[in-house]
Length: 110
Image (cartoon, rainbow, N blue to C red; front, top):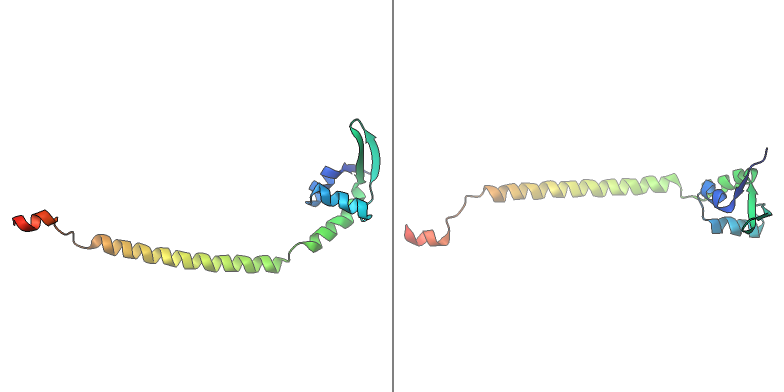
């Protein structure tokens, strides 16, 4: 049995906006039936129309290689920042280990 979806449901299934679904219907890339509802006419899309559209959406998304490259760049930046934090911690430790100087007013009394 054919199941029909509203524009909003089809958009959610394809992970696109409802406007994209409307645009595809208007351009003839997707078939839909206009049916009366209690709130006026609305488009209903057969679930069989979503299969070809899912393939188009999958192909149109950014390539995994681009995402992997971005992850590599972010990982390199993270390593650099971790090294910088380690250096700053070392400097902080050295500064805290310096001998404490006497307050200036005690210099004149002894």
